[in-house]
Amino acid sequence: MIDVLFVIPNSAKKIYQNLANIYTAIEPPTWALLLASNIRKNNLSCEILDCDALRLTEEQSIEEINDSKCRLACFVLYGQQPNQGTFLMIGATRLAQQLKLHHPMIKIGFIGSHISALPMEVLSYNYIDFVFINEGVYSLNNLLKTDLKNNLHKVKGIGYKDEENNPILNSPSEVVLEKDINNELPGYAWDLLPKNKNILDLYRAHYWHTFFSEKNRTPFVAVYSSLGCKFGCNFCMINIVNRNSINSDAKASDFKLMRHWDPMFFVDQLEILANYGVKTIRLSDEMFFLNKKFYVPILKEIINRGLKFNLWAYARVDTVRNDQLELFKEAGVNWLCLGIEAGNQEVRRNIDKGRFEKVNIRDVTKSINDHGINILGNYIFGLPEDSMQRMNETLDLAMELNTEHANFYPCQALPGSPLYFEAKKKKWDLPNSFEEYAFFSYECKPLRTNYCTSKEVLQFRDEAWQKYFTNPNFLNMIEKKFGKESKNNITKLSNIKLNRQILENSNEY
Ligand code: SF4
Image 1: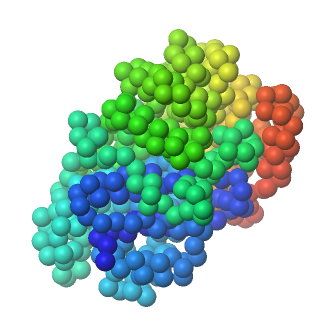
Image 2: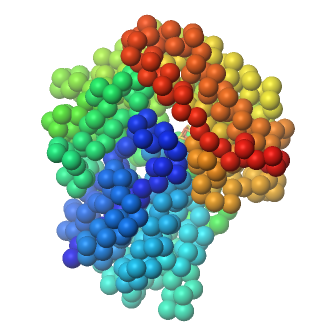
Image 3: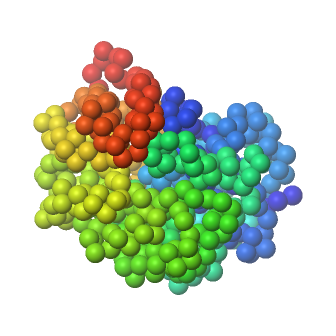
């Protein structure tokens, strides 16, 4: 018998439609790997069942969970970043429901960003025994020290049901502080991941990360050198996993917090990966290009140790420093992901990104490109102040910047984000299902804006995506930089159309 089985459900097809076959990434479950390292350090036992990487059906997943003889099946739901945790609820709720039906004795826990956002709602599902109010490192350990039945009121940071089946939320536990992070989260339990022949060979990078080519997509990992973010953008729910209050109005921006691993400790983790033969790595930090005190020693040490990676890291337009770009490139950072979000300053000001009003986005992107670093521009269509004209301004900016890759997201009021509470206050229609939240799903139903309907937003977003990725200027730039094969691969990708329910429907949304 093992103490805990970390389960990552398979929701890929529902979230990404046909993009899931080839084009989307399959990321190692970073948080399950961190939790596993903590569990083992505390002399408890665990395994990981990654149904997503194994592409298991519901029946196969249930069989594997039952065979594991775990005391607790703990579903870990963060997605490829915490903002996508809600989408993983699609596969998780179906699997957990069926698991309980077939094996009522198995205890089921849910941990992750959506659960931190709405713990009472998740606890109300009759097949879920435990929820974790925040990242759950200490709560999970303390829960496993009980028999999972008695003295549950003493375990901080969990929700559970009492003998009369009433849902109870205990007071929250602490999150791991920076001073304790090396010790409490001592790396990643890579050996617990499923594999085909070699470690990490079931995982693959985002298509663009390997320059729109299959080469070096596998093996692939995503790792953190820090957790959390010090900003509080109103569409973002990332910081909700830091929550230390059970107030039902608590939102992500109330829990702005960053915690860093010691830079040398982090580079040791990278060296382990290099020894496994991993070259393609995502630095998943919400904001890697922020604090010199941390990123400079990391990047210098990567160079000192002669580690050769193709790295991707996150920055904001206003955190990029010209004088550091050479160091980034030399250390193997070939991609910087920039949250540009909107072309119109009024729209940006409204989402707390006003801070970079004075920064010239064009100068920043040019400088990054001049250092040989590619850019992934993130844009959002359908922010509250977006009108058709303003969404066109965002698209115009994206086309003008012509970055090597661009994410076009339809805006969603994700549970836990300040925008979620704003939308509720305005009595705007919110999704009725997890499928409706997912950016690329058939059922996707974005938030309306002050000027546009959900349907208009989604239609604009999908057409904008087509326009960007079939633009001859973009395709020529890609061919020049990465070669003809990459250009042809993008053309094949743009032939895959997402089906959208609300666009097929004549109803107004
Ligand atoms: S900077 Fe990025 S991670 Fe931080 S709150 Fe804003 S969107 Fe979220």
